[in-house]
Length: 313
Image (tube, rainbow, N blue to C red; front, top):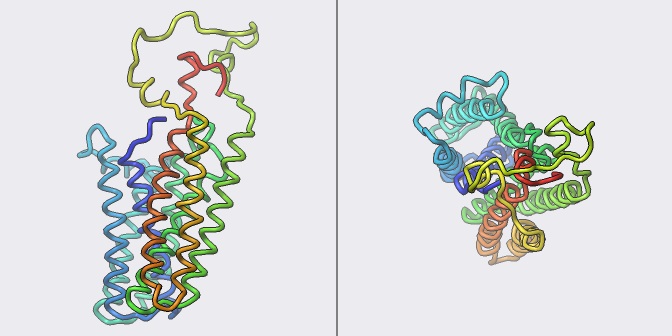
């Protein structure tokens, strides 16, 4: 699949924003982080900007962005629609939480209920984003049991790294915030590695014989191409990344999205290096997630390409 940069930006930015929002709401509810205005303002504002910016960028992928709102009507059957509905619900409840946090500096009563539901809604939204891709049986690399869990884990991990940076800047950093980020990054690395092993070792069962329904007659081959020149389907669905380049990008993902951020988070626990380490961890993670998400799209093979010369996917 041809990687759409607007969708890459959307999934990485909104995932980080939702992850940060979930951790802020949870720890404010539990009394782990101080419920004071500066932390609430910077944290909630950052999460809102990331989520809203990601959503706006995703509309650039549409032919008619002005009709994007219509996607919300199909929530019964579409994970894309469910994602949109959940984003709106999460944002509405987060505004209630923000009122209690910023105006009254407390998270109790109705604000505590809002915080608890925000945590659930943010995680469900991340899951819905992953299921948009995991539900597509036409793309073997996406129709995997680890796809949605990876989206949830990476969203929570990036949110934890952002939380560590905010706490470091506000001089509120504690060891628990560093270890939270390290544990989630480690889980994310393990899940991503398992995902790559699965798509590499899985039987390539999508064949031209199955696509045409003529397998009972024997070997099937295309006599003439469907089109005489490259078209939209071939450009979008037939995009390929060479295996040697994919392997390099996988190593880059492990380095920038997991290895270096873990190292920098550990460095952030050294006295005097909290802000520097947390900032470097955030920057490295941002680069790594963009590489990871680009590769996620580039390695995907759509079954439509069976009609354009591919024998097995």
